[in-house]
Length: 112
Length: 114
Image (cartoon, rainbow over all chains, first blue to last red; front, side):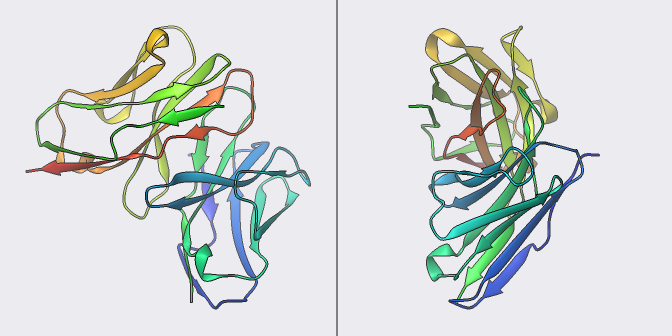
C-alpha cells in the first residue's frame, strides 16, 4: 500500500521558533508538494520539488523554505514561526506525468 | 489563468438521497481531473480520476463523475448518500503531459441528515 507519512499529526510551537515539518514517501515519486489548508481557502501550494535538491515556489512561499536531500524526504521549514502560520499542513507526492497525488495525514500546527 | 470552481461551499442532504457536487474548471490545455475526499482531521483520499476515454468514470465508495468538455465541468454524483459520506470534497485539475502541481478547488463540505 502506497504511503506518504508526515512526522507529526499535531504540533504546538512558540512564536519565533524554527519549525521543521517532515514528509516521507515510499513510492519512489519524483514530485513532492507542501500545501497549507485553511477554512474557506482550500489548499494553497507553498513549495514543490520535482527532483532531489530542486525546488519551486508555489503560491504562498513567504515565511517558508524547503529541503529535499533525498528522493523520499521533503521537509518544510518555518524559519521563524508566527501566529498567522497556524494551519493544517499537507504533504503530497506524485509520480511522473498524468498521475494522481497521494497525500499524508496532515500536520495541525498551532503557533502560540 | 488556471482555476477550479466549486460553487457550493456547504451542502446538506438526507441519508439515502442522491447527491451531486459541482466542479467547473478553466484550463488552457487538455485537462485531467480528480475528486478527493477529506474526513475531519485527515489527509485527502482519491475518489476517482479522469484522464481520457469514457467520460463517465466510476470511483470508490459508489461515487461517479462525468466529464463534460463543452461545459468545462466534472460533477461528482452518488445515487444514495450514507451518513459516513459526510466530509469535505475537493475537485482538482492537472495539465495533460505535466508532472507539476494540481490545481484544487476550495472544497464543498457535505453534511448528511439522518
